[in-house]
Image (tube, rainbow over all chains, first blue to last red; front, side, top):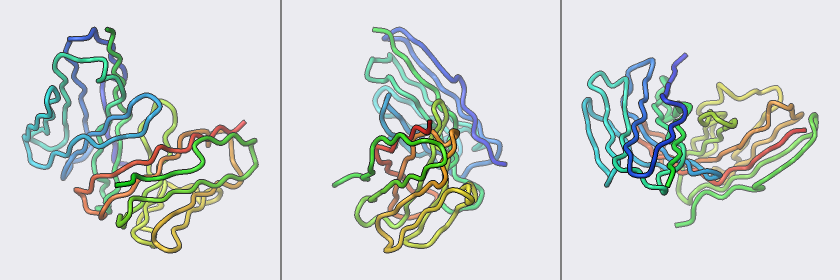
Length: 112
Length: 115
């Protein structure tokens, strides 16, 4: 079945270092969404990418959607302790019902 | 705007017992989702409602799990009987519509421990 995979599973960085997580889908996606889940919290929507090759920025966060619309990345510049959490990418399921298939997430730890 | 409400926040039961979770979505959101999130994994969709109709329940273990959204607003998810592997966080989410671009808003979740 359709799969969404993320790497790495865990990343430990020193505060101020950059961080990148990569997302790959087994199928072409019409769009991709990114969510952040703080420790003990629930997923919170960050952004959606729709166009091939699209790049969007939110302050220190840069999101990219691949040209083939099968991969995406999230890059954080100069991490801060507030960036700690698990970042999930999610793509729509093949049934076109609005269902999302989530990756397993990348957990970011930031050492002050 | 009030967020998605869920209760209880925590539940501990023994295997073979039954349990029910409640969710109240954001007012006006037609689509409601129940997800299961096992520790260290991403959320997995169990069931999706559009108003009071089921859109997708392909990954719901129907021999033990059931869900309803009778009036198209709040929803309950039930497990009967529970197994050890049902230990997880059960997340409810809602969206304004079920389109492919629909942002989903998650509730705080119910952490279930089955002993």
